[in-house]
Amino acid sequence: MSIDQRLQLITRNTAEIITIDELRKKLESGEKLKGYIGFEPSGLFHIGWLIWTQKVKDLVEAGVNMTLLRATWHAWINDKLGGDINLIKIAADYAIEVIKNYGVDTTKLNIVDADDIVKEKDYWALVIKVAKNASLARIKRALTIMGRRAEEAEIDASKLIYPAMQVSDIFYLDLDIALGGTDQRKAHMLARDVAEKMGKKKVISIHTPLLVGLQGGQRMSITEGMEEDDIQAEIKMSKSKPESAIFVNDSREDVEKKIMSAYCPKGIAENNPILQILKYIIFPRYNFVKIERDIRYGGDVEFKDYEELERAYIEGKIHPMDLKKATVRRLNEILEPIRKSLEKKPEFEEMIQKISKSVTR
Image (cartoon, rainbow, N blue to C red; front, side, top):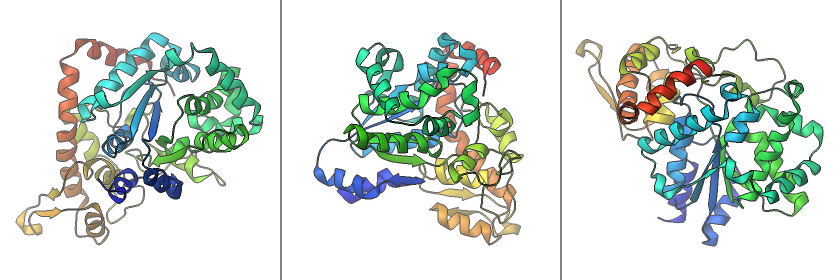
């Protein structure tokens, strides 16, 4: 695979690369790149997470040595699943099972548990050094990486440790690339700034889009003056708002019901969850999408790339109901192997029931 091909694979369907020039230079150097993503095992796996899962797959195919950090301690600090560390660990196992059955070759991943990292005294020394090189105001601003606001640091003091831990994860693992959704931008920028002060390697940040919730981009909590990444975090699909999300273990019938009732205004692409599912989840897996229609309405039509489909939708050539039906078919095809795998493992069925009752913000 040429450098241009690797670059195209790494950057496709991303919201932002900081910076693209640094990434190209790293690829041109010929050195083996190390990347990571840390995920909070915080509940059921919804399809929004498939965006970064696909990007992990892309990075592995592009020759990046990827680490998957099971951020169990981070989830505990963030009060996920009621702060039940045992349930958090089970949720981490469940997430790995989903990633594997999505099609990521987990044998090529370095899967690291936060429990192992925090046992190392050098790690905590690094956390303190990071904190010493960041102002309290900057740390509070970064709390949005946890899905929280600056004022929520008052809940308990451990929340203030979280951003310094995330930056320390990056330094401790000696990474070239940090992958995350756009909601992780503040942590990655903090890492780049602190790296200069501490003489550390500046990590290249790859940010994937956040899938908008099924109700679209209308949220009362959006206020004037909010930064763009904070706005996207407010309207994203969220496991703590089940009505906004499709979960990978949802039945075929539930997927259809949720898609068919989702926000999908005729001719409008902005913050349209159906179009986003097609762009970020379906098209990366398939060479085409077929819209099945009665011959009276023009008959079946196939689209070989997302841009062509979006253009036809904006021009009113595709009806929202036809678009939704096509999305249901393809999405269920993607989710079927994941469902079957989870059904074969009773320990996950029990866990899903527990998690469903324990999901917290």
